[in-house]
Amino acid sequence: MPVSPEVTATISTTASGLAPWACDPTRSRGRAQTEAAPRHRSDFQRDRDRIVHSSAFRRLEYKTQVFISHEGDLFRNRLTHSLEVAQIGRSIARALRLNEDLVEAIALAHDLGHTPFGHAGQHALNACMREHGGFEHNLQSLRIVDLLERHYADFDGLNLTFETREGILKHCSPEKARQLGEIGVRFLQKEQPSLEAQLANVADEIAYNNHDVDDGLRSGLLTMDSLAEVTLFRECRETVQARYPGLDPRRTQHETVRRMIDALVGDLIETSQATIDQRRPQSPDDVRRTGEPLIRFSPEMAEQARELKAFLRENLYHHHQVHGVMHKARQLIHDLFSAFEADPRLMPENYQRHAEEIAAHDPHGAQRAVADYIAGMTDRHAIREHHRLFDLGTLT
Ligand code: MG
View 1 (cartoon, rainbow, N blue to C red):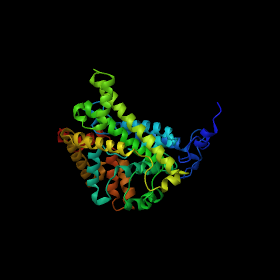
View 2: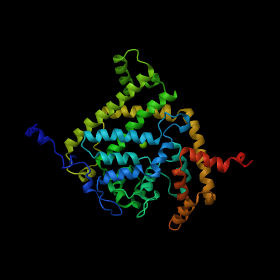
View 3: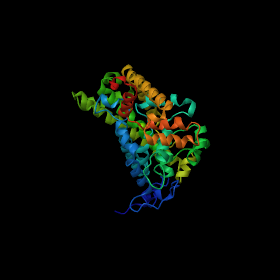
View 4: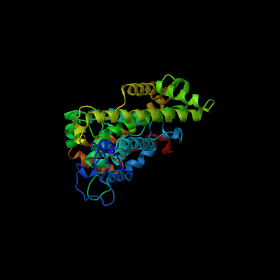
């Protein structure tokens, strides 16, 4: 069917079908080690594939999001969370004509650096590393893809493109940014990352806010009545109840959460598209030079998202049962760190060698290697290591 001139005037896409503000793999800033272009896929697809084939990616399956894995098989873990982020991110990317492959690569890699036991593990490891440069899961994700995965003959890490690495590094202190070279520049110059990176970041928030509602209800720590104080939940539930009177609670829960995701995603697409149309960036570099994110909710939806987040913080993440488990997890991380720092020979040989290598040029290298080892553990590996080192009963 012929397209009218009015329509063609409003559709401005590159030859690949991407919008001019989208990242184009043929114009990538490239990889630290130059490689021949892949034959049957784009460079961002190659990044995505390397992430999926990494060991750090497989470990996500056994890392806690909010609930420790042995609390039940249906709760999200970091792997299923990352898949949900990728799904939400890709849907929005397609609607905004952004690069779906890049969004997917960033989404699948964004949580690789998380310690076992969620944020409790991160806080504990950061406390252990206080005198040695600290520990931050976001920087650790970059460290994994840049250095710690060691499967390739020609380089350490996964040798990902600048654009995927840019998206993985969500935040960074000026001090760290100065040490990171090109990837840290935007934090010093107060620039934004690509729209794909901005999108992966918001998709992360949409995913966890909603699946934590779902998991919170499943666990019994949250109830639908308590959640009714959250505007977005209440309005979506009322829509479901009006349309399906007498629907059983499980289906009501699912129908409510899917409407919440849909409301957030719809608002994000419409508001972001309007903002992009208004600013008219001509390239990803134009996007980077804008002082504020262009991927955003309307003010009303941003307020509703904030309200939901605050509710979850207060009623789920700080629930005394979650808190109690996480208290033990913190202690476990402290115990492991002290043991490995005092005697690196308690670590596997490859980590002993890793410690020697980085200690040769970094005064905090011995501690950094311990942090790398602990951060890489799954929940159950950390628990097993703790038994091995501290459970005196196993001596008998
Ligand atoms: Mg996440």
